Length: 156
Image (tube, rainbow, N blue to C red):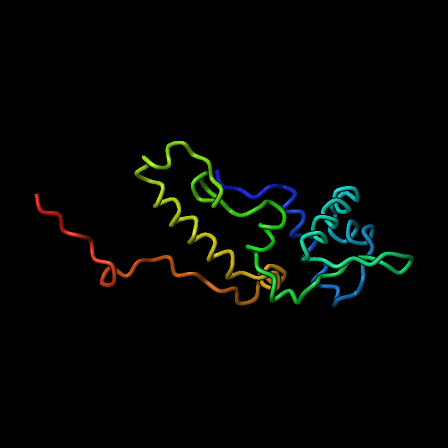
């Protein structure tokens, strides 16, 4: 099953919460309360998000966390990369993949094509879209135009 981790799910909730705060600094405690994510988990994720550049942090009594950029400029692909690493549905779908069967594999290029399509889909959805699911989220046309891609004829 292809699935994002629980921490990535929670990290996304945190980013959506921060997106709704209009660039106001929020404490880790406030983020935890606003997202219903346990405070230690929220703190851990905020540190990771700050380290990857999606969130800015400020120290001190009036410090806290806020998004580093406009939510419309942060893609779902960036969020997954920051929290889970690059999306790779198979070992050969990564640049540093290490599958001993790759040179002999008959399906690897198909998996790589599928992985690329997933990456494009994740890049088309932004944090702003995630925060407003009732809004007009871009729809992907995954149907194939039969005229544009005819089935090849094989002579026997």
